[in-house]
Length: 67
Image 1 (cartoon, rainbow, N blue to C red):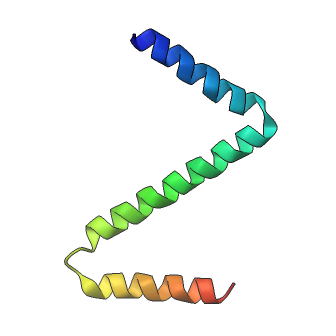
Image 2 (tube, rainbow, N blue to C red):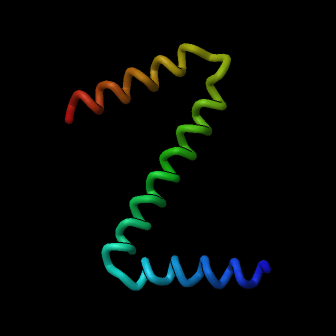
């Protein structure tokens, strides 16, 4: 059962990796997951401290408005 699931997953991922568009899509998904993980760590660390959260939100707002 587990080996069959692994083979199915491996074939689907292999298809996207061999295809250039698929490889690029996987890179963007991985980048998004890294960003979400970093945001999760930051959110966990600042639950009780509002000043740090406000500072981070302020800097992110400045960066976005600078685009």
